[in-house]
Image 1: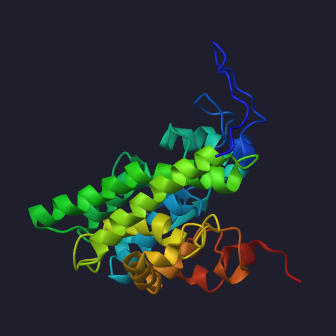
Image 2: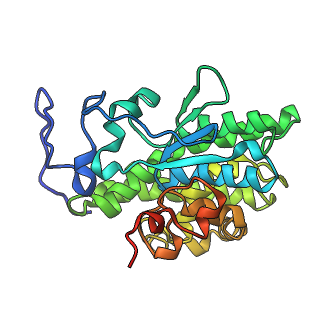
Amino acid sequence: MTQPPEYTPPKVWKWDSESGGKFASINRPIAGPTHDKELPVGRHPLQLYSLATPNGVKVTVLLEELLALGNTGAEYDAHLIDIGEGDQFGSGFVAVNPNSKIPALLDHSTTPPTRVFESGAILLHLAEKFGAFMPSDPADRAECLSWLFWQMGSAPYLGGGFGHFYAYAPYKMEYPINRFTMEVKRQLDVLDRRLADNAYLCGEEYTIADIAIWPWYGSLVLNRVYEAAEFIDAKSYKNVMRWANLIDARPAVQRGRMVNKTWGPLDQQLHERHEASDFDTKTQDKLRPAD
């Protein structure tokens, strides 16, 4: 391994706002709002404030799956939070999520509205609220929660570790890329071994554990994040690939992937979702001036 010039940490660290790579503008070492901005509120009880990153996709997929089961109470408004423009630092959003990360949910079916932040907490809140995608058997429930929290603890190595240094850092660095590639491949091996004898993460039942893990690890092996499928030899994880494609084929998953998406092919974007019909008549088209 090539030895780069050694970095000597200062006695007191100071923020260099130019050193963060592609997403330097959205990262800072302090919390709290930077500006006053109220959040919009639609007509449905569930108000989601998000973006179609893997963490955001978890929630929109679950909501679309709940609606596909006939849970009309899962109708929702999905408002776009443009993290590149700093929407997550507006006073309204910070009031819902003091951590200033998407997604955030306001459940207006309670008085006062219930705020839920952190994607795993939102999945658990919705699964319990509607009694779906969560096993009822105590042992199966424990297995589901274990895999849900496995994702919450593991994905930062994939996103903030591997993804950052492989795809977004200001320049390629051998040591962190090697370090995080090794860990991500270990995690994929964990999943591959589990899925060798199970259709889904918790057995034969599709649950919020799959919905949480798929947008990260399924998207990785399907080459939808970081363009790294070849680099990590994704095809060698045959059970993960089988599982990723199985979930990818679900209509609710295909709809959920579109919500709050503002990049990629236009037919796969839905900037905001307020009605089911928005998938046919896009919200962004409604806002576009007539030709």
